Image (cartoon, rainbow, N blue to C red; front, top):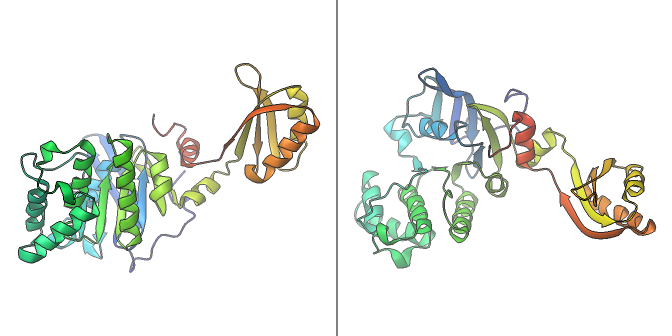
Length: 327
């Protein structure tokens, strides 16, 4: 499926896009890591590149940030050609690997990165204080990086990308390897940045992060953008149905047959390791569940547990590529 055929959501117009990538191509020898990728990001929008490791996400990010020259296609940041100094100053890049000086304090690191972008004096000190507060590290500002936890280093890494007040924030897998508390703090911060009007490009192979953060998602696989849209649009694109799993006892075969006769039930079968599970494929599980439970009571079926499995981006990825997201 081509990206065009699988794109139900209109991208930002050229004049409103902070970032516009057109037909990006990057090869490494005979391997094509990025193959004709096009997308755009508007002000205040969080755009997610979702795909497994090795799909081409990080290479795309490096093309966007001017760290690699493309073999084809273009990158524009606020209409400026990519890889120019003017375009790079508009970007805050947070790489997958923590890029900080271990023997410097948190404050000293931020001063260094701020000076690289031309900040100095009171303006620099004010901005350092602001980003330390943004990532909740004000109380650790004088500690060396080597003394910080992994999660704190990740948050300081984000602060380094924010210190010069970028128009576009680019985050490459920012939550890899962090504890749940730090992961939550990072995701909350990213959500806040987007709400405040910053354009964000976010790569991840965690489906739940994309669903939580992203206004639009591009699914990338083997270097190609195979679909794009809002999470809801992408789920609707593949016409997935909800699944209801009922663990129960009684005459489950006849119960499953009766379920199949209900409106908006596309199928129902008995399964599970011990034959105690009825799985129904339905339209709008939450509105239909009361009818299934009433039917169980009528047929003296004892329900022990109920699970609703709604379609998600992982189901979309499996449908489009034929492989699980984390394969």
